[in-house]
Image (cartoon, rainbow, N blue to C red; front, side, top):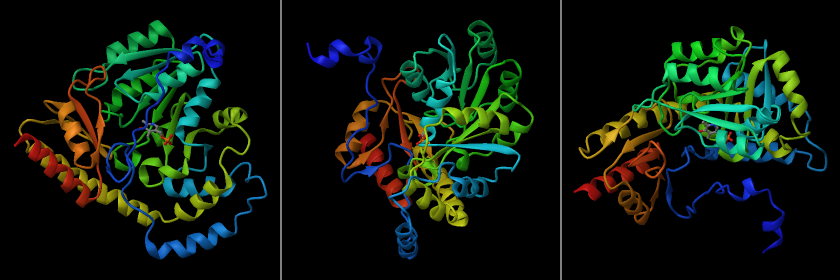
Length: 353
Ligand SMILES: *Cc1c(COP(=O)(O)O)cnc(C)c1O
C-alpha cells in the first residue's frame, strides 16, 4: 500500500480526476476556447505593456484597475460589487467554502460537472435535479427539490453546459423567489446568449452572477468574476486568498480586455459561424442538433463513439458525452473559425456516407 493511499480521505480517492485529453497538433473543438489569437498588430504593444510589470512585487491586492476594465467590458453597473477569481472555477469553490458542514449544493442535470466535484472536495451534499428530456428546467421538480433539500447554493448555468440552451426566464425567477438559498446564474457563455440576469441583481438580494473571460478568447488568463450586491461581495471577499489574480494576468487583462470592439467583433463572428455550423449539422439526416445560445453545439449522433474516434483519427478533437447520464449518443463541438468548422463538417459527412 502506498503512503498516499493510506493517508488520503477515502472520498477523494473515489473521485475520478478531471481529465483533459492531449490535443497536440489537433483542431481543438472540445473545450469552448476561442479560435482567435491576438492580432499581430497588437503584439508589440502588448509586450511593451508586459515589460512594465513588476514581478518582484506582489500583485495589486484588489486588482483595482482590472476590476474597472471588466466593468467596462461587460457593462457592469457601479452599484454592483465584483469579486475576481482565478477562473470562475475558483469562485465556485469560494462559494462552497462559505457554506456550513451539512449544507447542500443543488443544480440541474446534465450541467457543468464542477458544481458536483467542488461539493465533493468541500464535503458538502450535492443534489442534481433532472432536466426534462429536451433539457429544459422542470420547474415543479425544482421547486419540490428546493423545498425538500433546502439547499444553501443553487447553481444554474445560463446558457447551460453541455446542452447549450438557456432556460425559461420566468421559471428561473420563480426559483429565485422561492428560496433563501443563494442562486448563482453561471453566465460563462454570456457573450453568445440573447438574455442575461446581470440587471436582475438589483431586484433579488439572493442572486449572484458568475462570468469568465475563458469563453471570449482568454482561457489562458484564468480570470473569472462574481457579480452581486456590494455587501454580498464584501463578505465573500474575506474568503479569497490574497493575491489570487497574479500580476501577469492583471497586466495582460488590463491591456487585452480594453479591446472591447475586437472582442465583440470576434463574438459576432462566432455567432455567425454557429448558425452556419448548426445548419450544416442539421442537414446531415442521421443527426439531431440541439439549439444553442453558446459557442458550442450539442448533437445526437448514431454510433457517437465511432464518429468521435473517426474525427480524432482525422485530427479533430471534440467532446464525447455519449456515455454520460441523460446524454446518450451525444457529442459536443465548439464553434471554431470557418476553416475549422468546414473541416469538421466534411469529416462528419464522410463518416455517414
Ligand atoms: C467553462 C465554464 C466555467 C469555467 O470557467 P473558468 O473561468 O475557465 O474557470 C464555468 N461555468 C461553466 C458553465 C462553464 O462552461
